[in-house]
Amino acid sequence: MAKEGKRGIGRTVLIVLVALVVIGGVGSMMGGGSGTGTTGTGDSADAAAGTNQAAPEEQPAEEQEPYTVTDEQLDPSNPYGVFINGTLTNNTDNEVSYIQVEYNLYDADGAQIGTALANTNNLQPGGTWKFEAVGTASPDEVATFELIDVTGF
Image 1 (tube, rainbow, N blue to C red):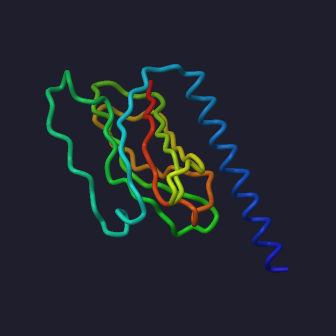
Image 2 (image 1 turned 90 degrees about the horizontal axis):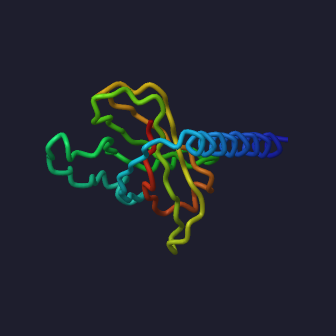
């Protein structure tokens, strides 16, 4: 009986995750937006070791990226889903009505095995957002991840 309950919960969590990914994807396609992104990689070894990527050099305001993503870490604590935690900063002078981060998930051989995304609304100028991107792969299969896009409008 306990095994059946866990399976039901796992399926429910998977269905919710897939629904969130589909809704986020449709939202980013509908909005068009001036999505600009930063790219980076992270993996569970980096997260476990607490290693951070080097901070980007200060750039003049007109050349600075509109959004920066830092503190990315894979959270392997949930057996039913993949979670990537991080912080996004709105470097613009404008409120962002909608913003989304998208990651590709890779196995130990480097093959893509899923995606993860998170989104929020009404991020203030200079504001920071602590996000948790939800993934579609089995957590025990994910070896690395890569930030693919940051979309905001």
